[in-house]
Amino acid sequence: MENEQLEQKSKINLEKFKIIADQSNNGIAIVDLKGDIQYINYYFAEIHGYSPNELVGKNLSIFHTEDQMKDVREINKNLIQIGSYSAKEVWHKHKDGTQFLMLMNAIVIKDDQGKPEYLAATAIDVTKQKRIQKRYKFLFESSRDAIMILEPPEWKFTRGNPATIEMFKAKNEKDFCSRAPWQYSPKLQPDNKPSKEKAMEIINKALRKGSHFFEWTHKRLNGEVFPATVLLSKMEIGERKFL
Image (cartoon, rainbow, N blue to C red; front, side):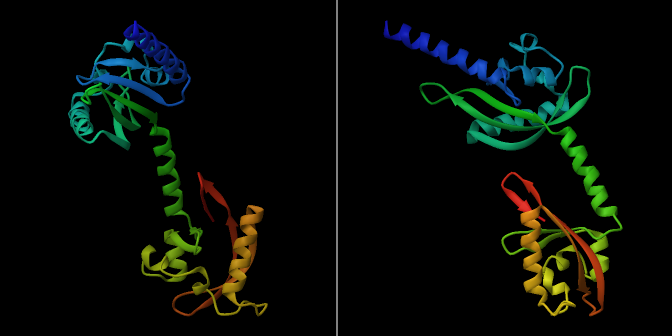
């Protein structure tokens, strides 16, 4: 009787899991150690061009080319040894043959004796995101305007595009980022305010307002002073804030 109750409870929990998983915006799949699909949610199936019913019982090799499967087998072999992995990029194959990149997280599900029984993975398609990243990287690197990134807590530069490096006569991006913003300015601004003090005021104003456009007197590393207009824009990615 007790075993029947546990089995019934297990079935109820599994149905609850499926209801949640089928509405997830992440792909979720469970395979056995041979790679045969035991469960797959709608997102995971549809992003590959299938329905879940078409895939249960099939091997995960249906998602990969032969060359990709060599990497997948090695990844799964290591997964069984270490128990989990996160943020691993893996190439997948659509039903029509097109290939796309997925960001995977996976864990090993063990039986009552602690032996690996299944592999469970979540995944999202990052192909579009990668294309956008490449596009913005091209714009960042090819822009004739100086573009730089400031990050807390010290509010130092963490990036500077080629136009920035040229403008301030730095050796390279690493050299440029080794200095605080006010080190690219004379000690005093035209209103006689210390550059460091005024820079922090402007940074705080941009953080409060979301952006701030202003005039500033800069100084190149060769000592040449020049006027410029600057737009500071606040950006957030998760809990990370920067200008």
